[in-house]
Length: 335
Image 1 (spheres, rainbow, N blue to C red):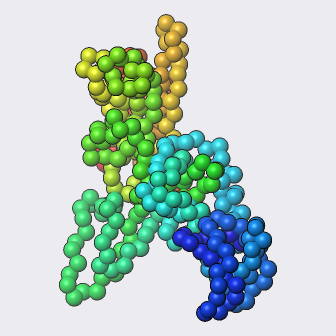
Image 2 (tube, rainbow, N blue to C red; image 1 turned 90 degrees about the vertical axis):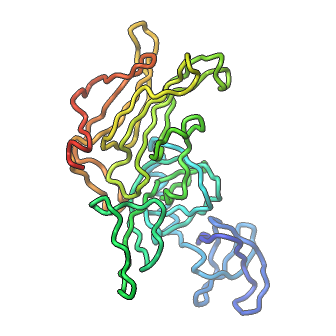
Image 3 (cartoon, rainbow, N blue to C red; image 1 turned 120 degrees about the vertical axis):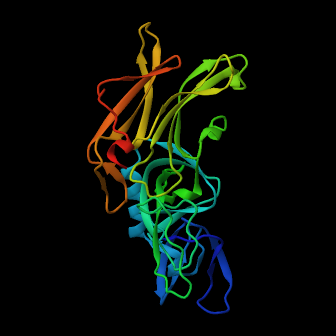
């Protein structure tokens, strides 16, 4: 068996020749049975029994297909750290990187669940324009302008990738710059030059003057990060938005930054002094400046991490155990 791995319309032809007739249309992901091979062409049969010829470069073999199946199986129970929508049609890859094996092609506006973030290098040809979300140099300043007449070497820039899962359970790595992380429209204006990595509902409050369904305003804990790609952390700011019953708008009840934060963040409830549920949230922070990067996936994790937990009583956010030690900030480590 082989599987169609191409975008756009693709047709089977009745023979291997410059002049031939189309006998069937096949689509990305469709399974085809191989009947015979002639050079770089395969004679295949569709599930409907249609037979025709196709170039072998337009398909993947069953071993690669099995790797995608194994990737989905390995991550089927992973927690969802955020949801997103595709800006354009986009391939899923086995590993982060534009030159890695791809297969599933999802159409624009497809909604996906985001499971993990990683970084991969991309080599840019000399004189090319870098991507809009680009990491700065170690000094934090843009590189020097090219000198006319002097040969330029290819440049390597870093890109962020998301491990994503669609509604069918298909799983793969997708270019993060082409995915819009879903954030409620009522709070996305408060990014303040950062990008939202996740937004999670903590609780809802009743306000007859709010514009929400049943006049119940959701309150959120959000994670934000710089626009640059290639970070050694997932987020550097945690912000809680509560709904003001006096001003009937969102206000910041909690803002922690800059931290070396890592996904996933979790929300839940604990029992308050009066026995009623109290919303909680937690996330991981690096306890030192040391991180490790998986050489295969590009996922970066702290060598030593602490899980930090908070609860929110009304609009007051406070630390709770078991870890109540200091939270190292970036500027405390010279980062």
